[in-house]
Length: 113
Length: 116
Image 1 (tube, each protein chain N blue to C red):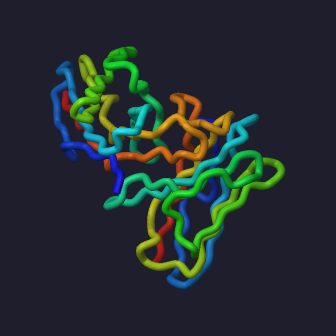
Image 2 (cartoon, rainbow over the protein chains, first blue to last red):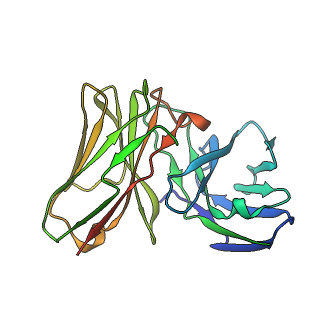
């Protein structure tokens, strides 16, 4: 079936390092991708999105890269902080009413100081 | 605070029972989405309502049902509960029908259901 997955279930980094979280998607028809952050005891929170007509999009300390050729998505977090510790999910969909947002299984990012 | 309110926060019940989870969307949001989150399955989309009408359906079991009321709050009904239904159930809301676009989808803090 169609699914979005992540390469690593956990990632541990030191404070100040740059973090890269990867995600592979399988539906070549997906045209919209989102990264969500979920802290303990909370619901997912939007981080950044990207449409399939773009390769890269930057936010505040975060960058999303999209490689449609190999159906790969990554989230880069610059100067990782302890507050970035959370579970990160990538999600894919088609920008069409009635289409579900499909989440990957998540990568747990642990930042040590 | 996302503005989406879910009650109760925790629910403990027994197999075979029926429970109702409640969601109040952000003020003005017309779409409500239900998700199930378990350790092995991640976040699974269950169902979406827009202004009282069902608009999209995901992996929702026949034992589960939902509705959106005229005041736009939504309820998710889970019946004949099984041990495997234990999970965190999230509600999200958005202003529009196609609420996948970025920050327009807001999640509540979830209801943790434990079936014993």
